[in-house]
Amino acid sequence: MTAAPEFELGEPQLAVARRAQDRGLCDECLGRLLGRWGHGLSNPERAARMREALGAPAAPAGPTCPVCGGTFARLGVWTERAVRAAEELEWHRFTCGSRWDPERLAVEEALWAELGSAWGESARAAFNRELGKRVAAATGAEGGPSRPDVVLLADLPIGRVEVTISPLYLRGRYRKLDRTIPQTRWPCRRCSGRGCVHCGGSGRTYPTSVEELVAAPFVAASRAEGTRFHGMGREDIDARMLGRGRPFVLELLRPRVRTLDLDALARELGPAAQGRVEVSDVGPAEADDVVRLKEAAPEKSYRVGVAGDVALGKVKDALSLAVGRTIAQRTPARVAHRRSDRVRARRIVAARLVDGAEGRFTVELRTEAGTYVKEWVEGDGGRTEPNLAALVGAPLRVEFLDVLEVHDAEGT
Ligand SMILES: [Zn+2]
Ligand SMILES: [Zn+2]
Image (spheres, rainbow, N blue to C red):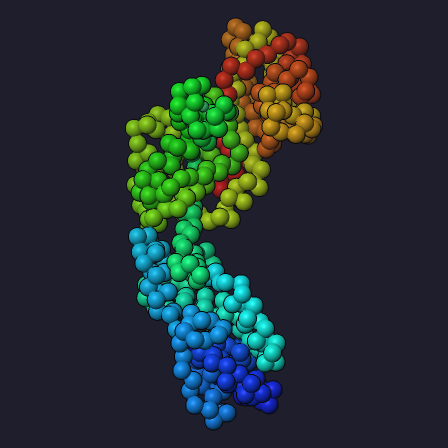
């Protein structure tokens, strides 16, 4: 139960009421002069108590109010505008905001000073709250600051409500079975995605991506305008992602629908994804999950196919030497253009020879997060030390690489 209202007017508050009584303020603006005095009353109720205490008759409310210019009298209109602006969208939680003419807000602050009120509530805060109450009553949606589906911004000078639709976050794991697709959309470098002769007008470097294949059914169902895709790290384009798959968060931008049958959509990645990308464990997520994903530093397991003229016994010896040892990896030559050049200490956690024949062999490795596996095998021109090629004393070349598992907190 709410506590009984409390609004005892002492001499300082009565003095404010007295000085304000002939200013032509609407009930909302008069009451708001003492909006932070006492509790349990609406501002118009405060105004009524103030008038009663002074023995003054109720002043006519309306468009003449020098503080709000009649804005509060039009709350019903603003409520209708807000509801109409978002009526084509699915939303359950919302926040209201408003944009005011700065001069109007300055008039209000000057009035507080002039009338000597230390208890004024700002017009904007009161308007946002009152609009929120009315929108909640009209729609059944939940008003408040936490994780709104939409933000309804009443632009008072312009007379319009702007709707900002929050992204819809989904999490899941993806497996990539195709060695030709990148994790995310990769705009053409020449034209930055606008389309040019170089990319055949597509604006892309690769025809598709994990992001696009995974997002397609969710974009269609949510009628989103775009996506952002966040992976817990990423594999090379020519590496497969196997095992339980790699955790990701898909951000659907400006979705018009928010209630989705996630399991059904995950099964329907569509013909384009057949044999290329699979998703599992799809569920709802939040913005914070993106941060958690980016901060995670899981160990990973790899299978690596290597070409090199070396006896398998030597490979075994080298692997047992390598396990548990720290390696120093300078930023690989192939990524030096986008990563700062420094030396990282990483560890090979486990390693074993799987099989081998004339001139090639396969190893499985488990490494710390951030280990450049290809460079550890080949040596990267001495930028990784020690490296497998140096340990076996022969040049090595990685022929294929699969990520077998991302060992994140959710399991193995
Ligand atoms: Zn007013
Ligand atoms: Zn291009």
